Amino acid sequence: MIERELRRALRERPAPGEHAAGERTLRVLRAAHAELTPPPRRRRVRPRAVAVALLVLFGLLGTALTPAGADVRHWIAERVSPEPTLSRLPAAGDLLVSSPAGTWVYRADGGLRRLGDYTDAGWSPRGLYVGAARGRRLYAVEPDGTVHWSILRPGAVSRPSWSPGLGYRVAYLEGGGVRVAAGDGTGDHAEGRNAAAVTPAWRPGSRNVLSWATRDGRVVTRDVDGGTTPWSLAPGGAVRDLEWTRDGSRLVVLLSGEVRVLGPAGALVASIPLPPGTSGRALSVHPGGRAAAVAGDTGGVVSVPLGGGAARRLFDGGGRFARVAWSPDGRWLLASWRGADQWVFIRSPGARRGVPDARHVVAFSGIENQFDPGGAAGDFPEPGGWCCG
Image 1 (cartoon, rainbow, N blue to C red):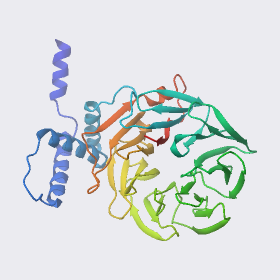
Image 2 (cartoon, rainbow, N blue to C red):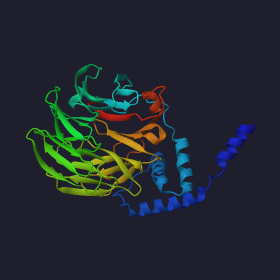
Image 3 (cartoon, rainbow, N blue to C red):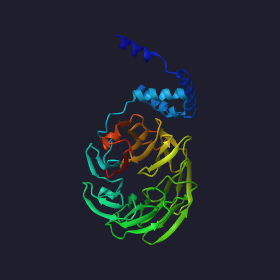
Image 4 (cartoon, one colour):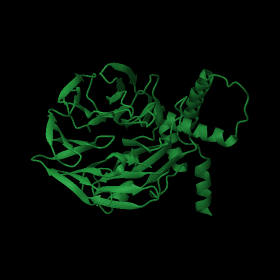
């Protein structure tokens, strides 16, 4: 009886600063409502939809609130509990995962296969192979774990990237250089020096054109078959990540505080600042090419419209988000939330307003233990690509 009465009293007692935080949030919501364009016709609003929308708005506003706002975030975290373990994927396809215990393939139905003690990995087109790195070797591994071929180098290799289309080339980093080999493991050769620790990006198309970042803040794009460098430029800061759109029309470059969109010849198409307080770490371009998702060391997960316009924060619970990956059908975004030991799956933003469908957010906890069972705390398990659903 005493325990029950104590719980009731705690629930009824307001959190520290709750009233002041509520007043601030109400003012923000009223201002946002005033900016909205009235709908063309009156529609019946479902109470459940209103409750869900308010919940997401409070979650997004949480990082902007004062210490009392931290109590609001904690209140939400207690009532939106993640599932205890990853048991399924919300969309078809296989997910490549790298952890301190090696590289894994996680299937949509929850099936799990460990490929080996690889530190970095990436899919080949259509998921026929996995390009994987371990120590001084680059491997081509079949999804069942069978090694197809390997290349031994004098220095440590990392960041394998398989060319799209027919998969005729594989790029990777060794020390401070970029190297390229044929898809069958032959013809390994150097392509560039002074490379930053950023995965090289292939431009889709009939030619094998590769872009990479350098340690002095430049982006180099090179035709690896013709041996020419069509362009090289400094986008204005250290490059955190880069990726071509699937149609090869734009190169998306992530800097710490903004996303720059470049044309195929290197011309600047758009420069989109990230929301205040966001420090970009990694990006993933939507399969449709309309937008990119950015994971932040700070500032949560952000949606960036590649045609211009303001970036929008999709999700932020505090702490570091290390990677993002789109499902093959583009309907779900996986955000790797290292700060909470969780993976968060967010429904794809709407095409018009870039607002996620808040009724479809699924979180799974205990990720580190699931992909590194019994291991000491180390690098967080990260998705290396969601392929071929």
